[in-house]
Image (tube, rainbow, N blue to C red):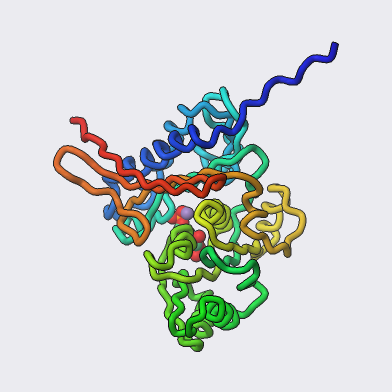
Length: 326
Ligand SMILES: O=P(O)(O)OC[C@H]1O[C@](O)(COP(=O)(O)O)[C@@H](O)[C@@H]1O
Ligand SMILES: [Mn+2]
């Protein structure tokens, strides 16, 4: 008689998502004492340690596919690290224990802890290279804007889709010398630009809630790992995302090949980066337009976490009060 294959535990996203919120909360709480202390490395390390400890308590057979770096350069939460108790569904994990290390060290807005989880094999193994990104919120026809359009064409196309003037569009862009030309071109349309110094996962997420954040579109290059995390967030919140990997040298191309990337010119859509259901949690570290940062009150710290599931489109906001034990 043929032996029945072992039962594969299902991706129980309803239950797992609650565990995921604790993971992002723990990372944020661990970085609390390092907000505004000018030490990016210490803040990141604290978040990494806490995130890893909490992740290892979850009943999953997890593999980090977007993590702190390659195994030889990141001792913890490196790409390929197995996490969880090993009892449970096989999942891919994408994480950034502190997205905005500099924002945290300088106590500037929109630093987050971020983690996403999906069935094994469904998240793109993005190498640590740059990615050209473009995002808009929900409610628009696919291809309303594309990476093939020039920045000014994208602004005009989105304004036409929204039935407003280009003057009414706000684009979020990372303030970098490499973006100077793009910024000038966006400005030539009359659109406003919200420049951010770091944190493009939050930048992209802002597009999903334009009424709350005032941001309609995100464009420019940033980390490819952050691109996968942003796509996971938009898959839950709604919205379009396009990304193309950018290579500066052969070393970066070799990294991509190692990660299994074959087509270097491919434009990835949101659903190419995240190919199935995903759950996503982010906790505010410093105050931002989407999430409140960690608050220090007598005797406790409080956090705000956004917890989302793409299967249902459910978005939960959770406040957590963590007693300070002495
Ligand atoms: O600073 P660069 O090289 O332009 O890279 C941009 C990337 O760095 C960040 O601003 C900050 O990321 P970390 O805090 O995780 O290092 C990302 O949001 C963004 O994708
Ligand atoms: Mn980051």
